[in-house]
Amino acid sequence: AAYREKMKELPLVAFFCSCILPEPKEKTPPPPTHSVVDLNLCLIKDMEVIELNKRSSGQAFEVILRPPSFDGQREFNPTIPPRRDPSLEEIQKKLDAAEERRKGQEAELLKHLAEKREHEREVAQKAAEEHNNFIKMAKEKLEQRMEINKENREAHIAAMLERLQEKEKHAEEVRKTKAQIEVDWQ
Image (cartoon, rainbow, N blue to C red; front, side):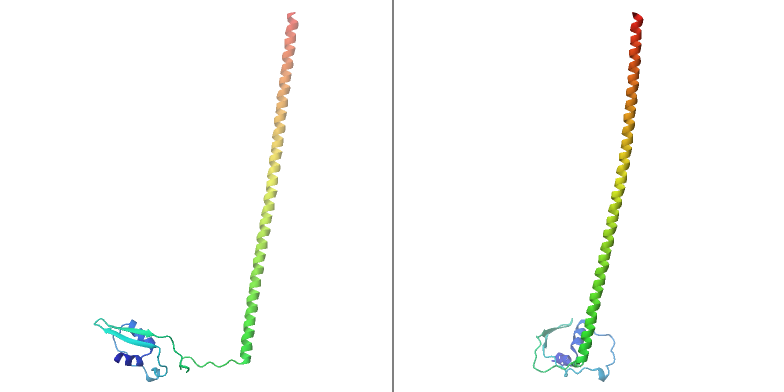
């Protein structure tokens, strides 16, 4: 019963904080009367606290929260001021601001897409240039190789013809010498 009285004096947040945090060592002065919350302004109907047992190590409580019940009356909440209905002019201002935001986001998106397209075009152009340069270099290397091969083949053929001519010359000399020796023996 004493605990229920204490619950009526303390706000719900202070109750949970007091359960979690230990009692302070030194006593703090009581708060001024203008900051005291009167719990009778907003009654906590959807919570029940049951004291389970008292021990030397502490107390145990069970807090049962029920789904909120609506009795037709609006509960008074002193922290939130009542909301007033917006005027037609305020609604129009909000709609205009939303339209401006939407247009800005759309413009930003289009700008981003244009930059992306430009980057893709630059990358494709660079790749095409590199491909063309590669083809050009490959053609030049192939032409150089073909020229070197042609020169090597011509030099090889010339060397073979020269050797063949030397052999032919040598064979002619041998034939002449043989014919001369045969004439001398007769």
